[in-house]
Length: 267
Ligand SMILES: Nc1ncnc2c1ncn2[C@@H]1O[C@H](COP(=O)(O)OP(=O)(O)OP(=O)(O)O)[C@@H](O)[C@H]1O
Image (cartoon, rainbow, N blue to C red):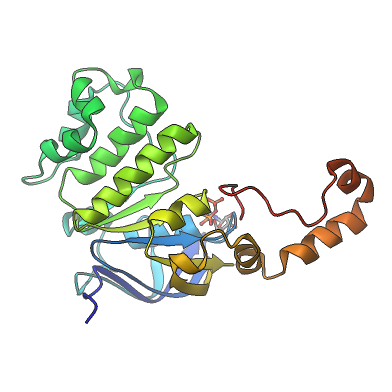
């Protein structure tokens, strides 16, 4: 029998400025695995994460963390209940040292040792102001801040923004390691193929609704399928339409229905 989900959403809706953005989302996040949320820009992925973390208020549905309802709790109580959140474009406190950044994020008996084991470069720089870290190290510090309180579930929203491919691979390896440690990870990642490499189950959002869920393996390298799921139309049709509307541009690119490169922002 499959393990009970660490995080379970049923029929969740989330508004932004009174406009429904996320609608009727039902998904499970298994312990010890990476669950991936994919979708085009504006599909509602960040809004969904904010709804889970309590930064945006869910208007419908239930959110259970280890079986207990959390949808009415304020963000700090969700965090205390075991939810870590790595927000998109969040930075470490630049004027605090690396260690101070971790200590202020810690609640209870959380252990800095795990963070330093995952990121030895942070331990080496623990007395340095975070403002002096490289972009990749800053992101490690942000991830570290979400880990110091021993979360059961970690939400990670596009931590690869603006980072070099080598650093992104390194961070993805760490995310896989978190899952191996038993943590349930819900991951949004612009590089779909990288996320699908380390993920077990994938959900695709379109216009705030889940339009697909299934094993990540099904979607690995399947650019056409992903395009269809993201936009609701076939990639070949989109390319043909583009060629009709701007024939000169297509001709100069010398391509018609060429799929985008693996790892591009849209599939
Ligand atoms: N604070 C806000 N107020 C009003 N509308 C918002 C707000 N934040 C997001 N939206 C709108 O909600 C929709 C979904 O945005 P969201 O950021 O959740 O999508 P996303 O899938 O995470 O996209 P991206 O990949 O660009 O981050 C968009 O149309 C966006 O303009």
